[in-house]
Image 1 (spheres, one colour):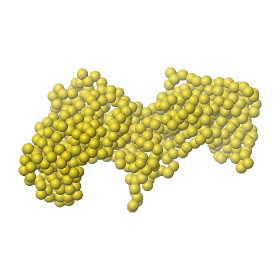
Image 2 (cartoon, one colour):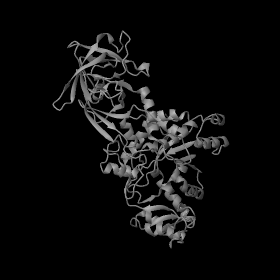
Image 3 (cartoon, helix red, strand yellow):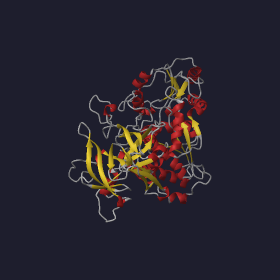
Image 4 (cartoon, helix red, strand yellow):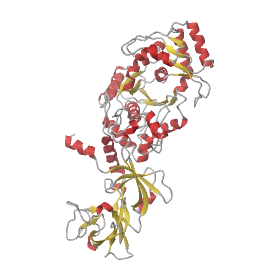
Length: 573
């Protein structure tokens, strides 16, 4: 999904007929009133390259790119690379790949570091205007001077330095004369402001660290609040959308732009995407990786886009989910089952069907001719006739699920048991006759008979059976490792902590189950990465990158049950 027709912006009448959230309403009004003249709508997605993108970022991406696309505008991808100690090229590469995987393409690729020179010149401009000063207080002393929500801050003893002294010290800071942490450049605003962000915020700190793009050219680096708005302005971003935690930062964002007299970018805040059973703290996600609580950033239990992609989620389902979750001015929590619902719906229409037995039990059809084999024709996807059909081999011995047989069936058990007839999907009616047990008394083989006239799964005399079971021909089956993933956290709210607990104490100890020796129909030997399958009666699966020649590994994306859709139906939604 790229920005469409950027040379022909939509007209006010077109905008009026377009359904919008409140962000779209603001942009529509700005287009109608020509707030930015004939300038094109310009947005940006500005991640810091200090980690992998997660599902929360997907909402911001869809908003930034989607609204620009809706209004005939453009979106930049800009890396907020002002903290060289935590940023790496690995993250830059992964972010670009993830944005494209979601279906978007940026107009310009930008970096905050592109603007280091201009930001420095603007800092000099603010010093000369008496709006910034060099402070020798330590970080702890600055915090102590800042005051509280109920008490004003105290002026730094260095606040009234002369313009000349500030210029001298700041240029020497840039030249590398001072050690890390000894001096900062602060904006001179109002130490009694009720907004703590306006109490002389730090603009630059000394940091002798090599930057991934600029190397050792700089030893002072701008703070986020100083660099962000000016970067937006330099790119002539008309609408700078960000999450609600930046609401209190908006006054400082506007202050820098107004003092410098530059392009008046507009910041607008919206709610974060919070999902049950999910934690989106970059710091904590990094901790999970470093402490080997997960296998890496792309562990299928992780909420990173890399992780959910590896688990088999599709970009189409994520975009649909984000749109359905909506945009608000207040933070809330979205049920993870809603995301799973849209993913199931998407996979139901696109996933090829296949038969796989995860807990195999051999079923021997005693009256089926030995050595005979045949093929049954099966639809690849009943929801999509264009997907065609495939031929699945059938033979005298097949595998069924262990749970599909009970020697002593419980009440209302309609699957296979002694003397009971069931349907093997697309094949025949079979009736269980006897069992073979191991030394411990466990059933390891079931013997049955079949009705040759029921080929295709229908009886010529019209008799009915209450259960249809999937199966895999034992003579043709391929083996695979199956990984069944659940929620990474045991609690819907991972931050629901008892005294002394950490959020990682709420990890789900049963978030993955590994099955060895599953039996799959032979067509799955040709599965490729990014292929998605519905294992009939089992769930949705995809091939994992750990697969190798002769060693297939499949991840369960989701089970078939859709609790969210059921609850919505009950509620009349």
